[in-house]
Amino acid sequence: MTLKRASGAILVAMAECCCPPPVEHSARSCPACEGRTLAVDLATIKALLTPDALGLLEMVTFRFCPEPACDTVYFSETGQVFRVTDVRVPVWQKLPPGDRLLC
Image: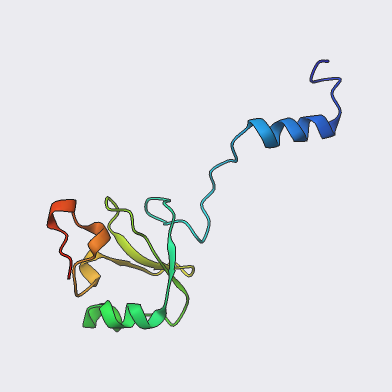
């Protein structure tokens, strides 16, 4: 059977089993590196931001980017971004493995 003669259902089934889904930027992926992210509580962000960054904080939902090579730490769906320099303490996930301290 050729693709021209295949029914739409067969083509959909082939696409679902054989083709990887397209990569799309979503509110859940980091806007800088497009990596996977985690939801983070606003109280955590308030506790860790520098005073200057805290003064700019919008009261919205934020996500955390754990990708070591990415400078973005927190971002919101509204487009607000906080980078490593906006956080008062070193971000463990962003440090090279030899520089990570454990309590």
